[in-house]
Every structure is written in C-alpha cells, then in structure tokens.
Amino acid sequence: MTEVRKGQAPAKLGRNEFHIRFRNAFHDPGYDALGRELDAIEQVAWEAYHEGRKAPRTVKAGPGYADPTYDLSIEWKETHERLLAAERHQKDPASRNRILLINGSSRNDGTCPGEVSKSWRMTMMARDLLMEQGFEADVLDLSLLNSDYDRHIHPCKGCVSTAMPLCHWPCSCYPNHAERQVNDWMNEIYERWVLAHGVIIITPVYWYQSPSPLKLMIDRLVCADGGNPDPSSTHGKKAEEAKDIELAGWDYPKHLAGRAFGVVVHGDVAGIESTRRSLADWFGWMDFVDAGSFAQLDRYVGYYESYAGSHATLDRDTAFQEEVRNVARAVAEAVREIRAGRVAVSQHRLRDPRPK
Image 1 (cartoon, rainbow, N blue to C red):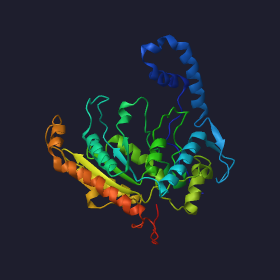
Image 2 (tube, helix red, strand yellow):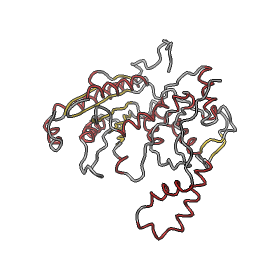
Image 3 (cartoon, rainbow, N blue to C red):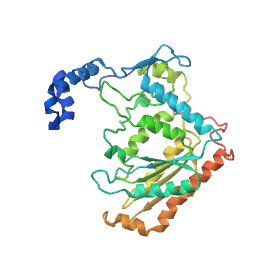
Image 4 (cartoon, rainbow, N blue to C red):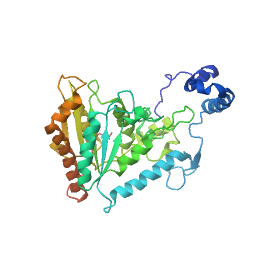
C-alpha cells in the first residue's frame, strides 16, 4: 500500500475559538435580542463540527455502486442523478442546440463597482445572436458570487493530487455541514455544463490571469476530467483505498468530452494572450472540440486608456463587437457539425501512453 503522508493540518478548533468564529456571523445588533436562541443554535453547530457530521442526511448507495450498503450523501446522490438525466437530454437528437455562455467578470452593478461589466455586455451580444439562430443560450453570470446572498463556489480541496479516484464526479467535498461549507453553487453549475453542446467563456484579465470566480469554477471542474462517479468505491474520502484503485489502473474518464468551445478574453494593458491560451489549453485537455480560429479571441479595449471611459471605448469598437459575435457563430456552427455526426469526437483509436 502506498503511504499516505500526514502532519500538515492543525488541530480542530477548541470550544472558545469556535464560539468566536460562529458569532462573527451575527455582528448585526439586530441579533442582540436573540442571544438565547443563538446559544442553542451554536451548540448544535458545535456538536456537528466536533463530531464531523459532514453529510448528516444519507441514503444507501444501492444497486450499481461498488458498495451498495455505503451511506451516500443524499445531496450528492440527487446531484448525480440530475447529471445522468442531463446527459441523456444532451445526447437526445431531439433536444435543441444549447450553448452555455459564461461571464467570467467579477463586476456587476448590484454591488460595490456600481456598473455592469464589459464582459457582461459581450455575453449579451453572443446570447442575442445565438437566440436568433434558434439556440438555447444559457447565461452563467459568475459575478453573482459577489452580489447574491450567501452564494459560494468553495475552493477545490485538491483530492485529485492524493489519487484521481478520490476526486468524485460530481464533487463530494461540498456541502460540508460540519464545517459550515454550504450553499455551494457548483452542483447547479455541473448540471449546466452537462446540458450544454457548446461552451463560451467571456472574461477580462485580472493581474495577468482569469478572475477569481472563473478560476474557482475551473478548479472545481477537475472532477469532470477523470473523476470517480462512485464514491462508494473509495468509501467516501479514504485516501488509502483511492490510491490502491488508481495504482491498479484508472481510465480517467472525460465526462464532458465532445462539446465545442469558444473563448473571448479582453484587457486593457497586458495578459490577454496568455489567458486566452491557458483557457484554450484547458478546454483541449478535457477533449472539447476546437471550433476554429474565429472561436478564440483576445483583444484590448482601450489600451492604456482610463478605466472610467472603457465602456464608451467598447461602444466605439464595433469591429470588436462583431468579432465577439463571430465567436458565437463559430461555436454554433461547430455544435451543428458535431450533432450532425460530421465531426469525429473523442472516438479515435489512439491510446495515451501517459493518461492523466
């Protein structure tokens, strides 16, 4: 058995430190009159934390799982079943062509910036064109992480680096009710990726890289590329079991392969090319279908000009606006070709000598 290395994680919180952290969520003086009620709720939360009740509501895995008697999280199993249904719908020849449009900007006018993002405007350009062509255009606005109440994409915990089978599809790390790591958006987002026949990411550059909401989503999609659809095979997060399974031979299933992709990256000073390349490389690694040169775009909007006037600059740059629409057109055409069977998708007979 491969050794599982230990010794990094600190000790669990003591009761007093837990109390301080728990009560930080109730700083508003409106809660002051509810001290007794909060004491009772805090005690339940403490017990859940102390006892490690990550998934307090479970159901037996049942037929089709490696261990039918394993207690699966009800929330995980419901999500898993929704993904299976979404995959059936996506592959149904009678279903409408569907493209997932992802606005990667952190900014919207419902929170501190007070203004819509340019990425949002470009997303709307692509949406309108796709709808005109009869497509379902599903807009995923990641800026809602910053403006919606208690909406989260919790960070990837890196299970895949311990062993690929420890990374479950869909992710089983969340919700973790013991740690109050809840209200995770990804279960809905996984379903929207599965339903799509094509995906377009439209994003600005933040400090030479993708904005944090976009990167959070990308990291949490690692389970779509090689992830284990059966948590009972590892009895949850049993690292030793997962290592043994991978070393015995793992096929690294690509759960989203065969969908078309497009990318629009914009900035004002630097970083657009490297960000566009990294996003395209990521799609390629997951066996998405390259929709051609018109589907990958990086442009500056107001190079070294003021932030304050950048929307007006975009207004004037009608060529860039049309290039954004061309990305949507290219991905739409790729979806049509794929669904008509005129593009071979991940069905070649080549074998990867170093699968991962």
